[in-house]
Image (cartoon, rainbow, N blue to C red; front, side, top):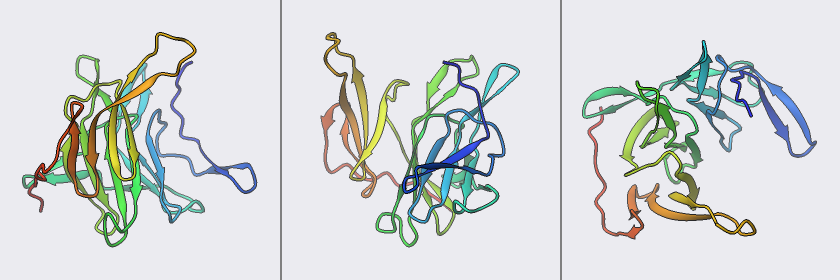
Length: 211
């Protein structure tokens, strides 16, 4: 199967079972992170384009304010750490998760986790950043890095816990592959609960200086 970048977007209506075309993205993309919040705002982060046969990884952060909007808005894609502005790492196949105002008050926000990019030598490498986005201030905050992240790790969220797993392929074709959690991160309290398959507790939250 060949992946071809596209700027075309559709939304599927569960009530009527119909696909509806949305405004085109500013650039064709493969593998962007996508999420929809409870106010029908659609967010897209990263992805890659193919230029002259070479993958160009992006870090654009885009919003379609609601599903009736006519145009995408490009939002801030930098964060401050140790009093320095830093751009979000270009990436594809990241996990983008929306959350309510009980986690990021007063208007809720997003978490961006993982993904991969391409090194200067052309090797695909994982992106370990975990970031949070506050919709009220429109600011990104760096939280932590995922230790020992691998390209083939699976990243998911369950009850506000970020779970990083190894996929263990079964030797029996009749059995499903197993997913073994190796690390867990509490997105609410912002601390690690498991590292390298070892449960941990009372890990202090690492504070970063922000403007």
